[in-house]
Image (cartoon, rainbow, N blue to C red; front, top):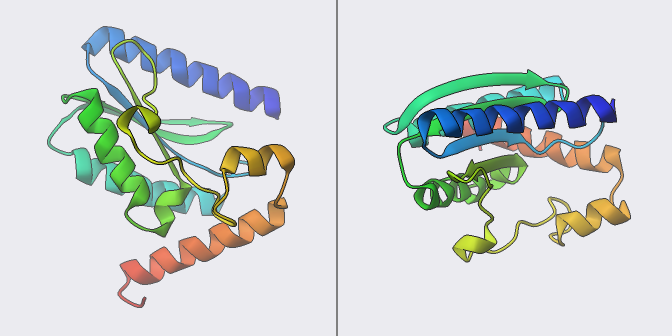
Length: 169
C-alpha cells in the first residue's frame, strides 16, 4: 500500500509539472491530510468535497484549468490559476486557517519552477498538530498519537463543520 501511495504522489507531481510547462502558470493542488494507509474513506471524501468547494469558490475568477485526480493517496483537486504564485499561496493559507477544518487541508501552490511554496517563504507560522498543537512532523515521526486518536479528532472536526454549514453550530 505504501508503494502505491508513493507512486500516486509521483504521478501527480509529474502531472503538475506537465501543466506548468503547458500553461506557464502556477498550479494549486488541494488534498486532505488524512492519516493511515487508507486515504480513500468516506470521511476523507466528505472533507475533500468541502475543500474542493472552497477552492473553486476562492479561486473562481482565476481558474484556467481544473482536474480531479484519484489515487491511492486520496483525491486531489488540481487548478491552474492565472495569478501570481505568492498571491495564490496567501489565499490558500487563509483557507487552511479560516476555521478548524482547514487544519485537515493540504493546499500546495507550485511556482513556475515546479517547486511548492512553503508557508515559511511567506512569513507564515508553521501548521500545528490537530491534537496537541505541537509540530505535526515531530508528532508523526515520534508516533505521539495513535491512528484511532487522530481519526476520532478528524471525525469531530468534520461533524463540527457539517453542523456549522447547516446552521446548527
